[in-house]
Length: 243
Ligand SMILES: C[S@@+](CC[C@H](N)C(=O)[O-])C[C@H]1O[C@@H](n2cnc3c(N)ncnc32)[C@H](O)[C@@H]1O
Image (tube, rainbow, N blue to C red; front, side):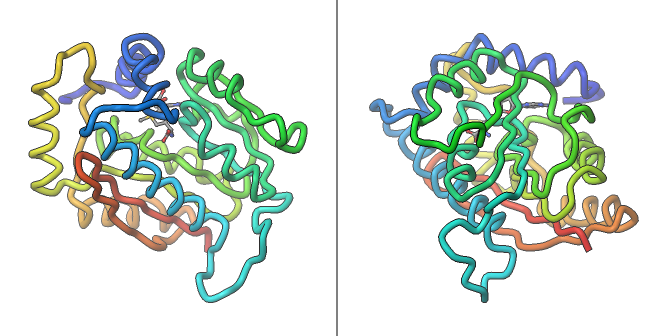
């Protein structure tokens, strides 16, 4: 990815998700039938979504948190895509703001909002997750939205939002493992127009070191970490906790 700046990279990601792949992304995040490769990605993404929601809802796994553990808490779904995670969190009682670079995906997320959600529990916006005008939140979740940035940019993004988050942040990164590198190579066999902007893998130890160094001075510590690998999907969840 070389010296691509955050703004340049953001522009490429927006173009991809808003135009090139909006239809493919809409299908992947629906119940419509998909090919075997994409079915494994869909299954892995579902597992990851449940893991992240569970971590936000339950900071202490030894406690029983009840049926609406996020009641009255505010949450930023950073890079919300078509809104699946935002809806899951709203169902647990959260007031969710979902933001995404792609106005097309945000419109789709609005269309897909279930009618039985509490009115106003999900607000969906097109824009940059780093926009300070979004205000403060109890939690931030960024599922597979920072994996397209260089690790330095992903860590800088987390540090930029950290002062506006009161309790926890959970996000994913692409672990720099051999299987993932093989999958990225296989991904290059797909037609260019149908491929996602390259994912930037990073060794977990390196990511943890970078996060610890950058976030400790801001009053944050590393929490749980867990890799989800299902067929063609591999991503690593990381929890960050305000001390
Ligand atoms: C792989 S998709 C994941 C979408 C959703 N989180 C999910 O898991 O279904 C990545 C999304 O992150 C969004 N994104 C990337 N950088 C962003 C930024 N700086 N601000 C807002 N959204 C961003 C993209 O537009 C894209 O929709």
